[in-house]
Length: 84
View 1 (tube, rainbow, N blue to C red):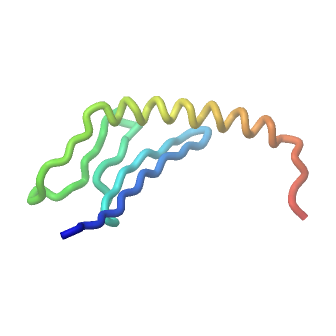
View 2: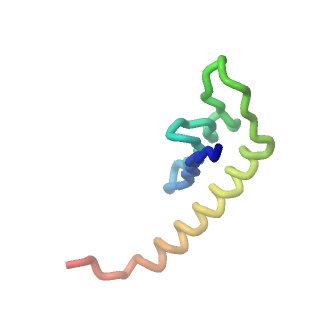
C-alpha cells in the first residue's frame, strides 16, 4: 500500500534571532536551538529514534545566509515607497 507523508521545513531569521525546524505529518521532529548551539529532538521516548547528523551545522550556515540576505533586502527596500 502507498503511504503518503507530509514533511515541512521552516527556516527564517530576524536581526537578532533565527529559526530552523523540521516536521513530519504535522509533528515537529527537530529544531535548532541557536542559544545553546545544538539540535533538539522533540520526539517522545516510545518512538523510533530520529537523528540528523550535520543538521545543526547546516542550520547555522542557513542562518548566516538568511541574515546576509535580510541586510541586502533591507538596504534595497529602505527607500521603497509604502503601499497606499
